[in-house]
Image (cartoon, rainbow, N blue to C red):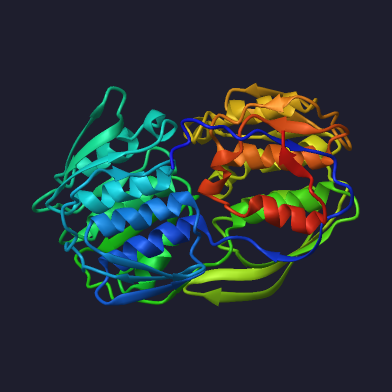
Length: 449
């Protein structure tokens, strides 16, 4: 479904009571995309449990089918992928439409770069505005060719390399998507593909590559890492249990922290240390947030989170934390708006190239709710209200699912209702967000505006 039309305005009213109970959030989006892709590249049949069935991930499933893998939906969250083996993907008969998913688009560029085939990729209006050169420029060094619209934007034509070369690339900016695209291209190339990242970014690709049998070597270098992949491995099908998405859990954590009387348990959340910057920042704000039943599943740390309403204080988030919470700044800004004191989030340049200019979008959301904030360079400064912000007004979500959900959570803590202009694309990452939130609140609080 395209979100180019039919907006769905929603209104979020002050919460009638605290959030309570136990819930699980949908599967991790990053891991879900990769489970389908590595399953398609593996020999044998991969069984996946807990896959996120949001639109972004369903686009990846459809693309893997077009590329020759057999992808079957067995039941809620349960999928089976019969793979083609490394280098075995086939030329798609139709255009690959990635909808709103920047992750899928960038990773599939890497996947296709090492296969001798031709493909065309497009997306919805939001994705067609997002720059792709940051991933296609390094991939071109393996021998792939890319043609696109002015500004390096979709639609994009890809001619994969017949004899792909291994890559040796130093990322100019920390990006798990670009790193993963280079590793995916390196799977088809002989020899060692090497990626150097200035700051350590989420390492789901490395963990899952090992889980499927590839040889991956990681060495720390300062704040960053050197990742080396031995090319042309035989990936073997492996069962994947997808943990709950920490980004999705963040909306419920912050809702519970800012709505008086809340006590909530969120089960089976992914706790990969390169994804938990939000949890660290909330604890620095004084959040009552505890982890129980910590365990390892499929190479990923998992646990249950218990959170209670807390009077929060301001936080100063250092720039090196950005890669571990790049998607969570809008919801952290909601917590900061309700906290006491002035918070500063440093080094947010990456937010300018998300589904929207998420830095400006986050600031506008706070201003509409009556919280004072400003942007200085790539820093966001939030002056906390020391309690409920005034509310009122309509937040322009700019087709950004995370801004939409963050604004709806903020509305729960405001003195007067807060509305959003469109919530239709929340389904890209979190299809059952509204019913889960209403269940935790025991009330219809987020309703059509």
